[in-house]
Amino acid sequence: MTSPFLITSLQNPMVKATRELHRMSECKARGEFLVEGTHQVVEAVAVCWPFRSVFWTNSWAEKQPALAARLLNQTECYCVGDGVLDRIATTQTPDGVVAVAEIQPSMEGPKLFTLGVFFDAVQDPGNMGTVVRAAAAAGADGVFASSECVHPFHPKVIRASAGLWFRSPPRSIDRDELFRFCRSNGIRILAAAAGGGSYWETDLIQPCLLVLGNEGAGLSESVLGLADDVLSVPMNTDVESLNVAMTGTLLLYEARRQRHTRPA
Image (cartoon, rainbow, N blue to C red; front, side, top):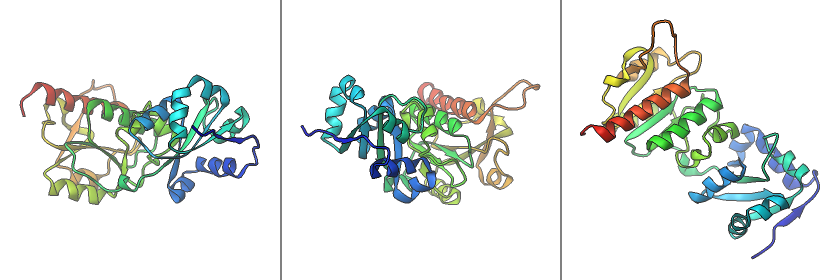
């Protein structure tokens, strides 16, 4: 087994280049993003997500010898001090490992799915990550995001998903392209908005795409007009709305419930 390269200086070009990935514009330009923490790295390795480099502290490698050995056989690895890792990481208390992963070209465009989620101008990374986590847990096989959304590879999105992002990573796609794809493949477009029919009474067994809108503005009238149906979560009259993460999770699990308890 080879040994990791040693980096001790904050001025090292690799450290500077990796630090630049804190900017989403740089991630897009280079086709790379940061994966931070043991749990996220383990989830990425489990689905064979390609890494370009990995940085770890010596104490981390001593605690994770099997994972460190596996990573050494797959990509370039660097042993760094705590100060260097703090410089690279976006979190205040990194647990000892940060990886640079590839944004895969296959993440662009739609593929056939039976249960999908589309984020339309969702801005909060915590909301997106929570729904991505729910999508993986509920068995959704298509997760998509419009260009108006927070970047799907944002570190906070991945953290909020508890690492399940790697099982259901959002695909960036144009809204009209996705809707055309759905219509061509018999996938119903279901928009989540106030005033729609109860999601309890909506058929979620057939292939469908759940469309979730912006935290403040919701879905536009044009998007609602393109949907096959509008559904909402029943609430007491003195409650205005639920947030995107909660709404998406409820809809996903209702789809799972229907598909496991009712005949198709």
